[in-house]
Length: 370
Ligand code: GDP
Ligand code: MG
Image (cartoon, rainbow, N blue to C red; front, top):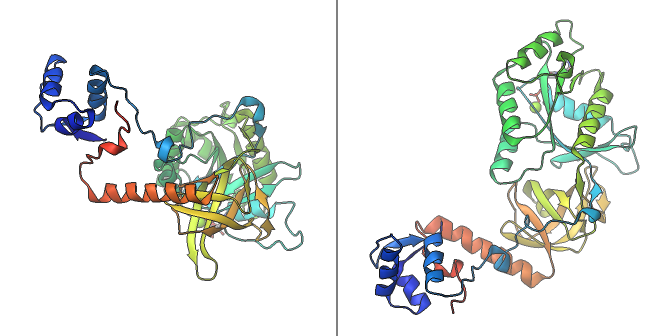
């Protein structure tokens, strides 16, 4: 939190420090002139003295990406973004690979599987589903901690021949905490020792009541090995997705979330982003975390060049100034100067956080006091 000493604030307001101390006393908050007060108290004082507060909002210098809401009539349905979670060896990777194999657009000219951190599947029915290709809870929680809630639906994988294991429980807890709907995939049904009913019963202990047990959490029996049940799983995902009425505005500057980033020896910094809203196009200028850049090329999950990417589509972006972090937001801006300005401002703020214990820089709080 921002803080300032009473004296500094007085200087800013061109008032006497003693008068501020007196005012604070009258407000029931006795302080000394060298004491540090928080931002809310400072604002209260400024108002008390009849000054006009102009908080330098992040929006003035930075870009606030979440506070402008697209009008309802501009919204269009978008594909769901799905994360697969579950205990180690229960078949997350196998299931992701098997689901990728169901993509009806696979095999189109030039399409070779690229592991870019996320991929899309087009089902026989024509529905599109985006899967995050990074199974595991760390990616999910790390992204959530950084404020990036990209997952719409969690598929919890439980091996029918095993049972609820520690990471299964963990996944259940993370999913509940995130408030994301869950679909249970009971995997390894091809195994003779599969006992799906036992899984359903054990799930009850964690307040997961699946449909087979007359609850409302969809459960699907699958085999990542034979491919049995994958269509049903995709149907379940689409049904859940329809209930969520997922929408985003496609015709605006893009806003996206980094799901994976790395430095490639040949291509330079690369990031796979998932478009939250808008359409990202070649040539777009953007900031992402503390980096700026211009889209030089976009590649889809089959390694093909694409001209643009719309909501829920994962694309690999070339043309970054540096490597961003997973969970960073990419925002398209009007020109390079603005992009550099914002990136530099964020870099400064990040450096400040690292070097100063108690920030006392009033410039980040108020601009003009008059
Ligand atoms: P992860 O750790 O959750 O990613 O699990 P993996 O996908 O690596 O699978 C762990 C092991 O289970 C591997 O040996 C897989 O071949 C096997 N496996 C995964 N799914 C199935 C399945 O549906 N049936 C059978 N029989 N084996 C499976
Ligand atoms: Mg795995």
